[in-house]
Length: 212
Image 1 (cartoon, rainbow, N blue to C red):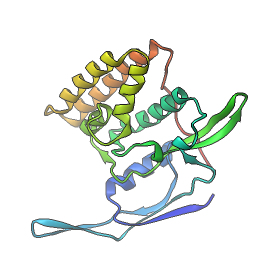
Image 2 (image 1 turned 60 degrees about the vertical axis):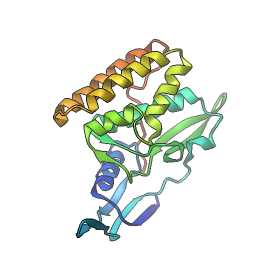
Image 3 (image 1 turned 90 degrees about the vertical axis):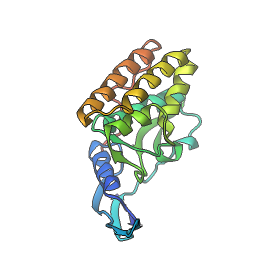
Image 4 (image 1 turned 45 degrees about the horizontal axis):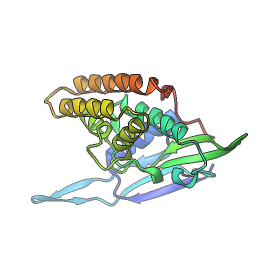
């Protein structure tokens, strides 16, 4: 397996999220990394450009929008299951979109299937359960919250998802401990599983595969 090198400003949160995703098999493996140092200059700050990271090169993968023939429900449920593994650990991605969801396609009897998936580009990631809730509720630039709503609407559950997201966005804005917010994340996924489960959709135990 080849390597991909990244240099420049790399915050510690990005390094940490990449390492976790790689260990879980839902992102490229990280072979080595050092975060940038940030120096405060008076009232502002200067972002250090001395960060570096060596990651697994995803040979044979392409961004998810390059595979329109793949069943969208399968792709979406698998993506949700992968992101859930990060959310369960209090990590949000912060910039999830189709270019950051990589697919290695296989050949099924009815066309292209998903052999494996990885999530990339953790430059806006962070470790904050309240941030996870905001990501789930579509209050950032991430694909995730908005896509959850679209999936629900496609199955006649738009009102239920609106109510769920509004409920937990309100919880995210409350002053709580990280542990309490993490409990809210668990509850959100449990309630969402009930909504999707009414239509035979499941995101549990979905994720990436170990790659050599």
